[in-house]
Length: 586
Image (cartoon, rainbow, N blue to C red; front, side):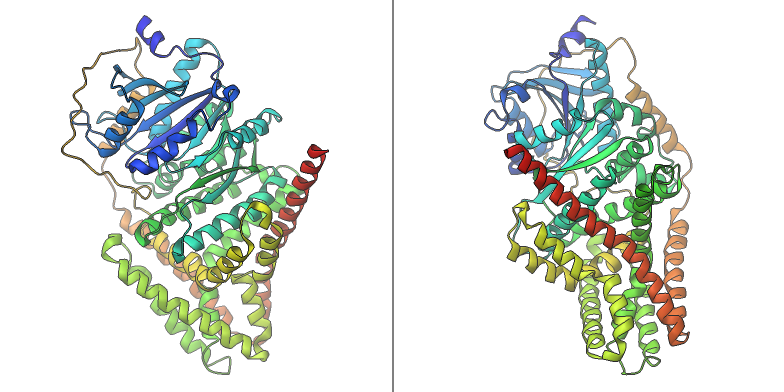
């Protein structure tokens, strides 16, 4: 027991626990991320408060041989002088990076693979450290292995938590670090900017950011522990919603839990970090599928399950309406694109329905061809159809604008799909975030052409067609057969059984239960999605002009509920920060 105390004997001043999960990163990515903790990057006062946990996933007990493992060992222990301990069902090595202590935790066969389970292992170790020293840490800094930030940005997050005891978590401005002329990266850079400068700014006025990304967020430790019972739940392997909520969107789910427990979740634009955006189609679609599905499920829970947004002030009800309108946009976005595409054919309204329904039937066929398919096998099928959809939608939009007698439905659909004017104004107002205005406007027009088809058609359909896919993230496990772990081990066993090991046993027992065929559930969800959009198209095309305009106006009103408050609140947040900076400078 004395050995365990020596291993976890950490200065009480270290009250900021940094959680850094790694799996299969390159040497460049790892060094770039670990350079955050160098002396030149973090002030001495902040360094004294930090304790780093590096959790390496995807290893093998007998042959821990991945290239990532080898890189970390050579970087963290340059003198090759360290002891290995077996604790909490994993291998732990203690070390120090420029006076910042760290624990290098290597998960093997005994522990469940996955980021959420790495977080549970971190929670277990951190709680034991808190018990040993008789005091809880202040906060948890969550980082990704491809994230880079500066000490002053981390300090901004700390300051935000310290000044408000009711704040459960805070995030900063994430930027794309690998910006290039790749259209996929440019679109993501634009989406990152809009999500932070527009939506997160508005959410902060409500004091309820709906997502604190795991790539760069700080959570109050007491709030984190309060959410652990729900966050560490063993998912039912036959429940599509639990798998997507717990294992594929753990950061979004943690934010939902914080909001449901009445904590504030805030955004601080002064705190910036960079991350690497996927540059390849397969990586991008894997990431977006996970984000899209977890967003839908968590939004439904936040709206309809013990929602604090319905129990407080009117402003919180406005946020409820904004999230609800975003869900409507996801569920009816495909049908709206079909309407836009139909504007390009025939001058009269009624013959258009033939083209619209042919286009719609092809989209339904396309959606069902994506079910139970490996992404690599359908990559070119997806890319070629994406190009076709982009051409058809933008051609229909162009023709519809030219026909002035279409002005009412075109204007409504324009607002529903693109929201160009308000977003362009927001880009201009928020260009002070360090982004070049000309680049932003270029990204805006690229996103105007490609974004609606990508984010309202392809990603929702692909996500629903593979909603039972349990694969996580953009990186797999690569094995290096040449590497062997030949360091002499020193055994260190605690005097109690780890709760995390118990959870592994419960998980393994759950996995031994007979697995149901989720294919039927997936087809039901995908079919329901298509039926909903079909009903919407039938109402639009098979009723008279007055009814059509009323229906589209209602849809427009739902969308206006989202974009107008978000726009004005983001402007309020912008000027509020400028005033604070002015007062501080005076």
